[in-house]
Image 1 (tube, rainbow, N blue to C red):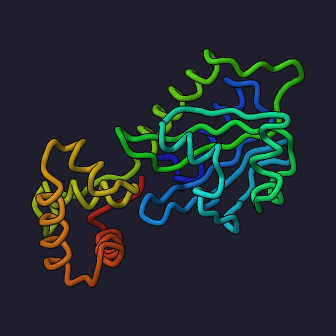
Image 2: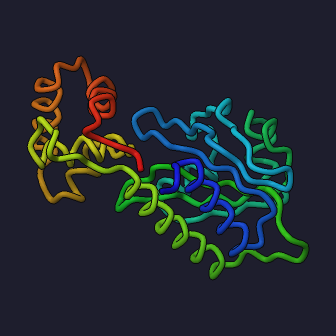
Length: 219
């Protein structure tokens, strides 16, 4: 069985084989804090950890737009310079162009892939961006499927477990309500009862308890 790290490596490898990008940087995204946090990268230098990178994506227009619209975005030249020359993002990736592919599970964005280098003569037109968007949706399904529930040892109801799993992959209350076709107040009630049953202090503590007890697992 593949480890999570192996799955991420294979995902970025497939990305570079399918698209004309020369590098790929994978980030996780938290909608609660608008936080983009580096996970791993795959470049000509190999597979590496980029966990030291943390940014409020609201300060990064291209990434913010990709997440809000759940569609791949591309920027280059003067437009890219105006948007990024003053951001700390440019210190991590000195470049004059960038493509951002959001990784989605349903209506939620759980991460994104950034690329700053492209093969000579590359034109990232609407067709390529649509393909990148589709790749992000498929990648999201792979990552989402890597979080499983052991219902035999669960202390929560199926609905409570489903809500907590969605929290673990970064979904906000409204996104959960829309996807599960229930009211936001119902989602909040499931969260409240789950936290109480687990003896946790908050959502983050409850998710940690579920992983620690082996109820939520990463394949």
